[in-house]
Length: 227
Image (cartoon, rainbow, N blue to C red; front, top):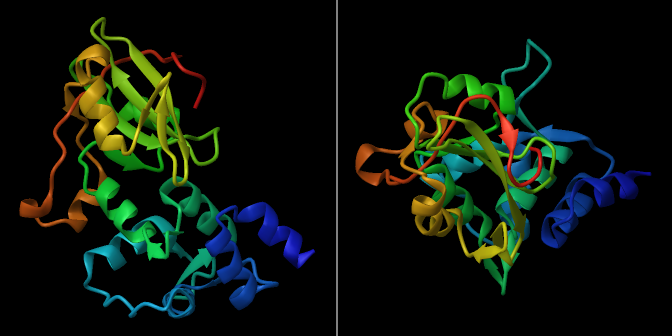
């Protein structure tokens, strides 16, 4: 049963092996223990806590313990699998790629991560047409959703499919990165200005931030599948 849980939770082959070898039989582990095993298994130096890649990894992966007396954060097996699906592959061609992928996406002003459709609509309420954000899809594992206010001031939600190692698909177009997608689609979809309020922006010094692109909407209908 323990092996089945890992099989179901983590699709990334490297991530699967790390959890199976280091944490088999556990639903969650302490953040510090996870990092120690992760860097050791990947055979790379342990990132310092003030390193931006460490901070970004912690921001998307570590969770507060349900034990109110515990100060340590934890890593849940399900969340680890999700992060590998969103930002993976963990390793490609012998090179660790996950950390760069996470950091490159989190630094974008338009990326808001964990938001439901309702929360996205609330966040963009009263915003001008062309406002947009990208969030994790709430219904399709490993995928993303672009929520935006179109030219008619209508809220739209469009799915972006992601296959680790093979890029992103938006309708019939494929891209290497979400940034490339937004750049290419900004005029066609009317992605004008990133929605403010991403909690990840506080991780980056202003000089390191980038990400000026498009978005639209209010009301809520799906253009490319529900999210």
